[in-house]
Image (cartoon, rainbow, N blue to C red; front, side, top):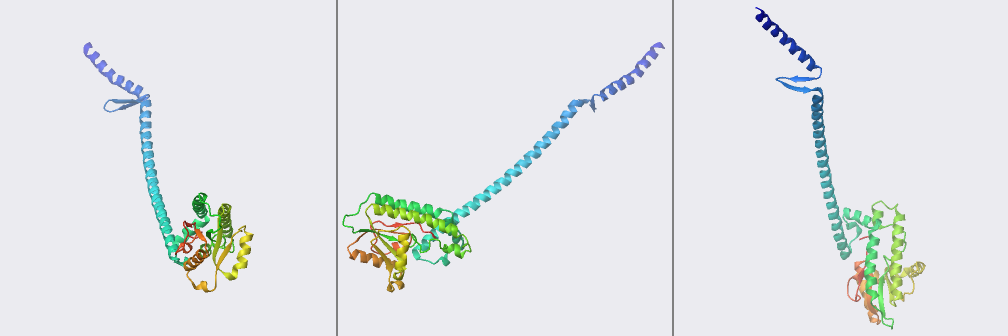
Length: 296
């Protein structure tokens, strides 16, 4: 009997022990069925890790999206740059076509008018002018004229010395940008300085300079005064177009006058011009120089 009572007492004490253990664990951790137990600290760390992984995953997605957009923008920029370069190369080739065929400005493609304005206003014309002049200077640096004064250099002055150095660039005028004359005047002034420097170097080396222009003989006095006022002097002759020559193609006019110089006993060492019509036809110099053109 007493043995049976002892067994019952042990049985009744077991649930109370389990209840007490569960009560103690409830205050410090979690029991996950069936039998996996986490403390409060471990649970917090686990949850924080999940949050961190989620944040990192979102961050990676955002970074990938930004990189993809950047690549698309970069590719678009490369394509646009490629198109810009292609357009510029086309316009350079077309400019040569214009010069060779003596085309009018109206025959410029619209895109090339834009590049021609950029070429003049943004300094590329002055850079090219300086480089082409350096080529001429390098050539004449190693040459000396004969003492008889018959070795001459024929200089086309029409782009070197416009009748009005502040006149509006024709493409600026036609594009509605004629209010930017200050820029035009500055560029032409700097070009004038470069021309003057070249001519002074040639004169100091003993070369005789003959000026030639497409202007009529009626403008002789005005043109002479303007040349002297601008600092150009010491030329033996200024060739201008007669009335009969006004109906003549310009390249034929230049060729005709070169032939006359040769018949007078002069030796044409060089023709220097920024326009192809002055460098076309017979009786050219031994070495001729095409300078940068402010329009092409």
